[in-house]
Image 1 (cartoon, rainbow, N blue to C red):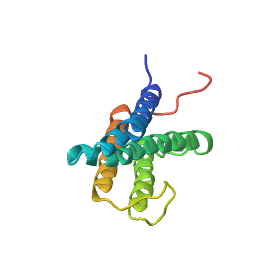
Image 2 (cartoon, one colour):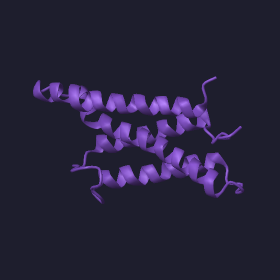
Image 3 (cartoon, rainbow, N blue to C red):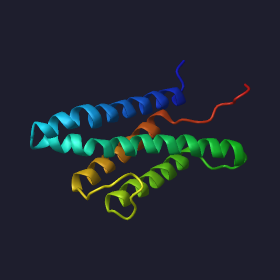
Length: 140
């Protein structure tokens, strides 16, 4: 049986692979060929979607691990941890788009980047809500 954690890890690896393909393979082709319209918007903004999804999944794993290690007796439900992960990832990616911080590289404001980031955050929440990952016993 495939656990939610393994499925999330596979999703995260797929998102990272898609990010690398778009950013380093498709983006140069589209930009050199001077494509316009939807295709150009997609290759320029898709990394923001990937950053939101992968970042949220990473934070979810981190928060679940912290809960398991330090707050195991807490009645904090996993669903709240998913929302906290979305909130943290959202603050990071949206503030980056509005140039409040520059931790992800040299960004320029683009409304499509914000839109793709929001779609990524909503998608990540949907994935987490569907899979409902938890920390499973390490020793059984």
